[in-house]
Length: 299
Image (cartoon, rainbow, N blue to C red):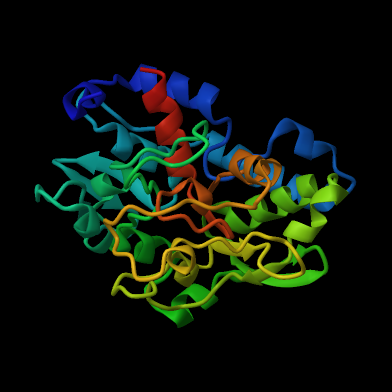
């Protein structure tokens, strides 16, 4: 679908489709996860989801779909879209589309908000298509506004999450920690998956390996699992294809059960195993990617 066609969505179309496509963007709790015995965690997650569900999408007939989704998923930070810019809660603005023609690598290294939606997040394909890495493009100006522009700033928002005997540090910004708790509650009902769940890391302020862009782990909204204790989740494109460049053809590999993946996705997380440059241990809180994909596919 062309960008022009996407920009012609009306406010009513987007609002109605959003409710159907993703019941609580920003960390909604799936219906079956509310049946957990951990009532305090469930109530907390439900409350956060309800608050996000009540947030209105302020759009008009010319707003890009990606901008509308950002308004919907991050209402505490992204307040308006006007004159090609996202207006933030602190009064600053971020240009939605900088107008530059970018290569694949440039969409990763110098992403504006529009570039975040440049790739397909395909939840049905058995292997990702060439150079389809939805989620690897992150507008650093936007993410630093939301989660923090330094390690110290991010750490102020980290809270403890009980993850199968581990105490993990995860950001409470945008309801990310509540969503991870909801994932844990649902996974706890599947003891056969336990060996895949041990975490090898959440918050870690650093650059992406081999690049100058900030890692998603820097923002405290990403978790790696399944690398140790026989989890078999440690398939990473550079480990499996040593010496290959970002645009080279590579061989895909995955040992993470899709049952785990689908539970994470129900709560607003994307999976690195759906990237051409796969990282199958990696789950990242990106509800805007999931909502965009669902709305786009309805057209």
